[in-house]
Image (tube, rainbow, N blue to C red; front, side, top):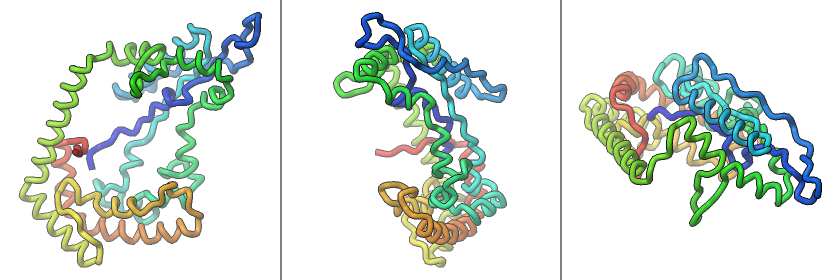
Length: 297
């Protein structure tokens, strides 16, 4: 139930860019046909600091690739965090309206496949398609190798390593790369903060009591209760539904079956919301005081 950043930076994906470069087989070395470079992205006035850095990084990546004789179209996909979290129960009335149509938002994508505002739908997934992917796929092996070297797609001992334009753009947006020791130290501090926050919430007497009432209500509704921890119970039923989705994803199921699955999900989501109403009213304000990212292992 911790907040999750959902701004996707897809420009640095495996199919990261388009390239205009000399044909390896051409003695003249003339550039092959390629689309003109995308204009620099304008940073939205309402962008927060993290979003601003992503725009800076993409623009720097495009400029670096252009300087090396390549074409790269900068691309940042922004998602509406409020819309994505509408069904979480923070606002009971809004969540009730959301869940009556979309349930937890798991099978809805397979029913409303053409709605770009429904998480997991084909239209939603297409929003994050890199504008460069098709051009990279059309490169010859020699061109792709040269492109990857300029872009910075390298591996060392089986691990991805920043280099080339990726490294240059990252440093322009986020500053000089940290040493592994600094990264390890930061990760350890972040992990400890999350553990402390979870312990504070799970040890809160009011939340413990309300979570027990929540669990009792679910049991009466015939829903299996696998945890009563305050930091876990709010997403428990949602995760139970999610765990039953096919390996190929919800879009691998035909629409008639998806409708049946969504109908069942809506029923469970409604019961879960009602049973957890008092719990969530107390939980979310305290979560704001003790935010955390889930810690496993």
